[in-house]
Image (tube, rainbow, N blue to C red; front, side):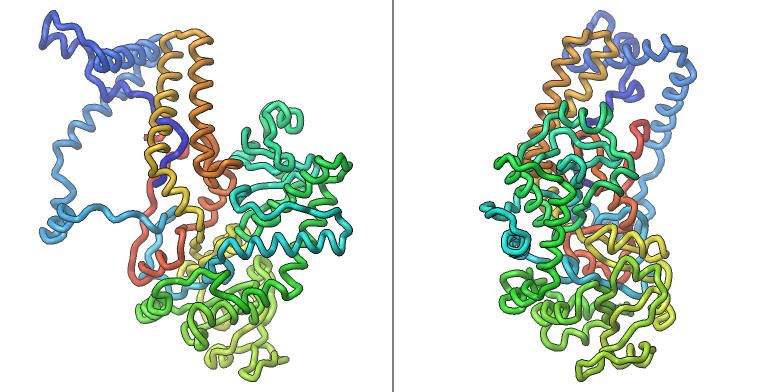
Length: 530
């Protein structure tokens, strides 16, 4: 659905007439301009195929042309539609796509919809990451004896999906094939050159999965952007002061400081004192949830957050009676191990104490919040299983990977989608995309025509300059969350793997929660795909 930095495929011989067919109708007329160029490309492509003994391929191309001509004479698919629907299609412009589909899902077959809390039900402002950064910085200086850190949180620096290499101290973005993205790797706040990256990772810039597991920290949710920014700033502090450092030690110190901020209560107290500063409201939230329940859906919350934090945010979003909007509430679930362990729930009594006995169905009937638990217990108590459950979360690994493996349908909330789609719709991006695609086309065609290295080198340099400008429209430091050059990022690939649906806001999903059928968009996996 979104434009990419890849170019459009070279002109196919099957889409152009042969020169002889035109000149036979107009003897003595020589084609000029773009038409001549297209015919020259077609003729060149055909001659290359013949040179390599590809006559059968040429015959297949001819058969494909005949098939397309036959298809063009077939009745329109709109003839299958009722006249009233066909008339509405003619008069109404296409609706913009708000929920994107990787695998087909029928909402009329979904019985229960579950929600994570942080960055799913509660979407936070950048003020929260700034607070996390400042409090973690204080922890480093006051409790870990770090020198004064004068920097502040930079919300324009990091993007979701980055890795910190603890062996080299590099903050990098990976492609889906686990290659380090050139022009998107930093030591502190200094952009690394590709020569430096090749010395660290070899000519292919490839990171083995075992290396990533053993030596890299992942930043896969929006919470982690403050940690990535602080870690880069601490590395830069060490570089600027000439302090020898072990990147693993720095990463551990920063991670411990951020964890301390999350568990010491200050973060919760700040949000509780000023929820409007930290939490985005959701327009029509209560009505959307009520509509989903009227359509027969059971709604539940499954979150790692403690019940106190959940209660603070949900009171702001829905009011004091927020639990009435849900059939089940599970806090302190400890995902992703929730999906693999076998552990009972404990229920929270109306008077606030946690019951000693394991929770049973009567606790669910009385709308008592549950703590801990496991997927096995949830299935036993509710009977919900397989793709009749849709779970919605923001973290593709902690929230979505395991439930998808266990058979649930999944939906990812990716707030960055809004910005990325808006950037891709700008005139500047359109222009750069067209120029980059033209460069792709020219490189293939010029090489087929036998152009020399000097020509190809010049085109490659121009294409890379265009791609760099495209990338930096999304983010000056790391580019798009979803793409680098011609490749999808590792984060985009994870979304493709683990999310059946993805959208920028929960309200877009709820708008189609009754009986909508989501259909996947055909995506090219390999270049030869039609």
